[in-house]
Amino acid sequence: MSTQTTSPSEAPAAGSPEPRRTSMMPLWANPRIGLLILLIALVALFTALRPAFMDTTLTLVPLQSDISVYAVVGLSQLAVLSLGHMNMAVGRMAAMSAFAMGLAYDRLGLSLVISLVIGLIVGMLLGALAGLIISRTGVNSFVVTLAMDFALVGLITILYSRFTDGVAFSGQPAGMDALRNDTFADYCTGDICGPNIPLVVPIALVAALVVGLLFRFSRLGREILMTGANGKAAELSGIPIRNRVVQAHALSGLLAGLAGFLLAANNGAFSASIGDSFLLPSFLGPVLGGTLLAGGAVSILGTVLGATLTQVIYKGLNLLQFQLDQLNLYIGMVLLVALSLDRVRHVVAERRGVRV
Image 1 (spheres, one colour):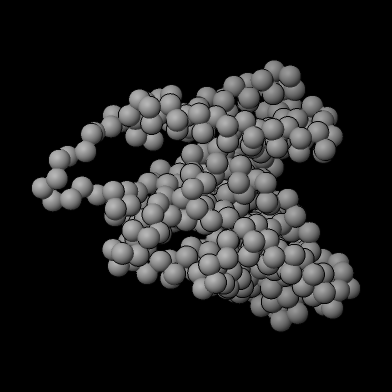
Image 2: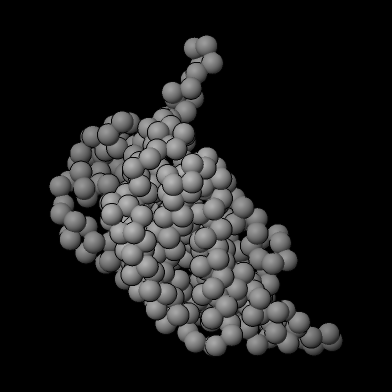
């Protein structure tokens, strides 16, 4: 699902000559097609080099869980990239949300669902605060969210030291073990069992579907995209762009909180380290999938494919016994190449009059 918009200033005026039509997107200009081909090629390569890559228990089930987490992380960044903004605090928002969830069940004795709702609200409020500062002061989103990231690092350390002596919450709410260990294959009706898909996967799919519907069909989503495409024109057309900035950042914080919950479910604990690895993958998924850094166009399907590709690379190189620093080096190179190719693709498309 790919969504883009035309800014109000670009709409043809009544009685004016019709603008030159652009042709539909060919296969070479569609980043999702390229991602899918590359993904299939990498799976085949890693399987040939290390047959254990296709082992269900060792690789495929954990890989699906990881993809679920980082797809939601990518959606969190996508929410603000739609404006042409960045959320450099996506990992710390996830960590703060996870802390709130852990505190709710471990200290207050609340259920997993209620704790999750509390954590999501915390993430949403942090995102809204960042958006409010950005919209009211005009300070660049990179600066605001980077400052928030540093502030939250200190706050998270203080909170965990105060409530848990610096360790993870020790309690396990009902349902956490199932989310961590079970797949649908563990639930059978007679002789019929479900597929080997972790229980966290549908949560990520629902999140992707909701975000996709928001940007494609809702007025709020379209106005966020119009704000990202041309903020001044959007404001002149009556769109409350300050509110849309706050709402997009609030959505980013909420999704970061959900990603923190999914990672905690995979790890089996709510700890201060949740979100430490979120920043780079949060950009990789959307950028590889075709979301514009300048704002105005997003791709939910592309983000999911980008997150899948990233985690396949991580898992494959890990099975080939690459060290962590080597993994980060290659993933960073992938992002640089992706950004370069995306720019080349857009330049070529503009010269050929192709709409991307």
